[in-house]
Image (cartoon, rainbow, N blue to C red; front, side, top):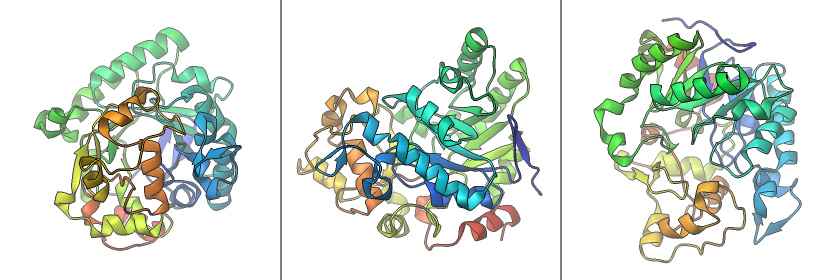
Length: 363
């Protein structure tokens, strides 16, 4: 199967592969810039931008952590990340991922628009007020992530009532993705919620509102998977984990090595302070949490609203901002290493160019 380009809003993506937004620091300028350069859609994660370039662009840090929301989601850092990504991909479309669960969601969306994002992707909650924050940026495409037709219906209904607009595309993320899930633990194990079973009802819902592309995400690994979801009616796919195994991925070599060393049984669902199950690699961090020897929770960065300033972090035993940033920097002892269910298949680094060729040609 050869792939058609995909039009999202006013933007055309030559190859219908969207790179998943991975934070803290896993998909920044190098990865996103190179994916867009090679014809896909590179996505810059807005999470924890304060850590970019050794915290060069933030105003204040405490104990090596960006202090408060405005430094953790640093506007100046995000601007610089986009600027550097543009040096790589030129005028090719480039997007930003902004989680709905973060503190200061609205300002971070505006910051991304100002920085030059052509698209905003939002998951981890229902972004019913997303269009409010892109006012003044009519060319920025809006792409919510959903896990059901019901969620899409709610978004379309609210957006039409309040703003008289519809999504430019929608991503359906199944329960095999890395990081936070839009499902309960039980649903993640239930065949009813497999990605392939979510596609038809969402396509039906899209027809009720108009015609915009559906992108499949969660556990997609190779050309066979891409072909499968396009044959089910999707216009393209989103892939995160596979891109971690590239030279250009912004994560540390230690982060990549954790995945190269991981076995299938090491990849599990964990409790998260965000309130959703999250998938990652079981490392020594979880032994430390069980033994009550994990790093102390101080909530310096105040990253996500469902955590209630460290309350939920204390329940699950770790601060997600601190542990994800430790993983990005390569701290194998204390880092939280998110990955999709196929992360154990990664075994060596290749270039983004080579990976895109493999995905398109099935090499």
